[in-house]
Every structure is written in C-alpha cells, then in structure tokens.
Amino acid sequence: MLYGLCRQYQQGNMGGFFGKLRFTGGERVWKKVRKDKSNEANKKPFINLQCISSFNKQTALYNYMHHPVLKIILLHFAFFTVLSSSAQDSTFNAKHRAIFFPYPMYKEHWRTSLGFSFLTTPQDITEEVRLRIPCGEFVALRKISENVQAQARVSFQFLQNHFTAGVHYVKPLGKKFYWSAGNDIGFWFGFLKVQGFDSKASGWLTYPSASIGYMTRKDLLISLKLQVGFNLYYEALNGENKFISNKRYYNGESITLAIEQPFYQRKHLTLAFSAISNNFYWQTWSLFYKTNRKVFYPQITVGFIL
Image (tube, rainbow, N blue to C red; front, side, top):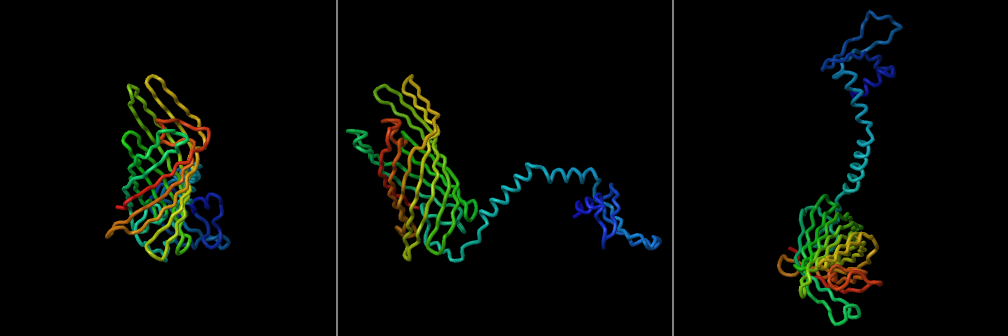
C-alpha cells in the first residue's frame, strides 16, 4: 500500500477524495495532518504523509518486483499451487494400502512394498539359455502433497541392479476410478566374471507412464499401467574393450495389470503381470545389447505391502 501511494504521488494521480500527497523521505513513521484551514478555498485539501523509506528504496523495490526472473518463479509457483491444491475428495475411502493403484495420499506420508519378480527370456533369442532368476523388488512412495507423490523402486539381483525415481500426479475421477501420470529416471549396472573375462555395463533410461485404477465394492483394487521407455546412455566394458553409446532412442513399452487386496491380518498383497516389449532390457545386458526387433518379455511381480 505504501509503495502504491508513493508511486501515485510521483505520477500526480492522487486527486479526488484523498487530495494531494506530499512525499518526504527519511522518516520511519506515518503522520496524518489535519486540513490546513488557511489554504485558499479553491485549493484541494491535502494529507501530509511521511513515508517509511526514501524514494531510492521505493524505486529499487519497484525494479525488484518487475524482475523477469522473479516473474518466472512466481508463475511456476502459482502453477504448481493450482495443480496440487485440488480439494480433498469427500467420497474417498481408502480400503487398504496400495502401490500400483493410484491412490492419493491424504493422511499417509509413506507407502512401502517388498517382493520379487520373475522374468522369462524368449527361447528364439537366447537359444538354450532361458533366464528365470527372481529379482528382488523394493518400492517406496513419499507424499509431496495430496495429489503429488515421489516414487522410488529398487530391483536387485546383486550382480545386476536397477534403480528408478520420479514424481507422479494422482487424482480421483469419481467414486470408483483414479488415474495418475508421471515420469521416472532409471539407472542400471551389472558386472560378471566368466572364464577370466571381467564384464561390466551400466546405463540410463527414462520411463514416462500413466495409470488408471478401479475400486471394486469389495477389498480388491485393479490397476492398468502403460509405460514407455527411452534409452539415454549405455556403457559396456569387456576386458580392455570398451563400448559407449550416447544415442537416444525409443526402447519400447510395457503394459501392467495389477490387483491388490488384503493378505494376512493387516498386511496386503500385490500381484501384477507385465507384458514388456523392448529392443533392450537391462536384465539381458550380459547376453546381448540391442536387437533389431522388439522382444517380448513376460514378467510376474509379487509384493507385500509393509
């Protein structure tokens, strides 16, 4: 308010009911003076205000408020405030905790799950070798706001491991349906020593995804998730031979159907089937890098929600 009054006085726009403003800097108090009866009748009454700071400080404040960087920051702040300030769903009733199902986090702050997955490689690609080694799965969800969640997943086989982390936006579509969308960044690495060969490899990927969930009348949650992958970086070392690829390409997609329900006492279970179709999959790095066509990998995931 003080800044606006001073600006109006400089521009000569403080007429009307309030009369003229007289600006005197240097003091730190406001002072109102009664109308001067000695003024001539044709002169408008004025109020003498002693402003808090000098004109130079007011000018600096004006320039700061109109700085382009500040405008961008305020614009982003307003956007994410509107995005995450959706009113809490009055019809929401969390039947039980879930990982795949796109539940908003109204009262929770953390969700975690520990389990394992089985991936089968196609016989026409790997010939005699078919991998059915289980992979440990740990998932953690952290509440950022009621509709924004941070997600992290660790897939570990000790000799080869995969980490992903990202942010997802979750929102109800009604009493029964919920949806989410987001993106995860993944990093994987592996090492293998076979007959004197020391093989190592690592890489970066990104996974945009979207999910929709249906809440049944009973304690059963059904989710359908569509995820695509993009390869960002690949590096392999076999003895003294080193191969690096910075080529970014569309790697493939996967569709996951998951059900979640109570399991034992207050524990809950996740059972998911994934149909993965990729040119490259991180668990097969020791067999081959990339195929000329997409390869289908079926995967089953079992998780115990903690």
